[in-house]
Length: 289
Image (tube, rainbow, N blue to C red; front, side, top):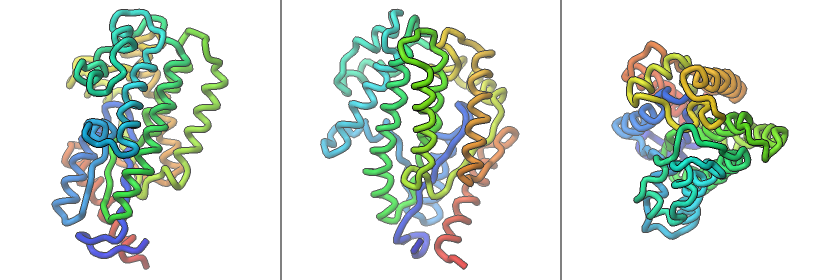
């Protein structure tokens, strides 16, 4: 990989961060972007919601990404009959109206009679959005010499939603279909196209994540436990996140990612550890032996 100095890399790098809900991925990603800029690198933080929020952009795939964001949420609550879920489903399909009415935050953590097919569809829509962001934003920025840091590696949320969808009682979509979707997603995110140049797995226990989330927000959010499957609460949070922890750790190992244990570390210590990994990797790429 041909590169120049910190301020003028001929080709940049893509940094992906993976971890459980509450692991601190967004905090680390944003802080890392700033730290890299302070060290002279051209760094950029990329997030789907931020791209969608640029409503004046009409070039491809900006409009598509806005619509995908709306339909991801509308389909996730598909078929549910409780009032908050119906509000999301029946809300405006126009992105500006959808966000103005705060419909992304309007749905229930325990939707009544949600459809398994809707949840599975929402996961696949997320993958489509992630693929477009990779192709049209991340790769473009990396080609121009930027170090791109994303909020969270897309595999994390897509697989989480599919795992919850498998447990939804309404049997409108066969579970073996979802199993094949999960196999496809694992394969797709393992490709060279979707893999970051540097992967960081933030290792943290589900118990610590639950403590952090409840301390900061008072309770877990949609699809952070098994509420969509009718089993909300701490026990179902542990059930879901423990399964995801084993899955994420196994995939991070398979992909050859770096692991940073964040259980007992302060945010500053985590940032220092991640920054050291990234700077060392960049230096190694610039000056291969």
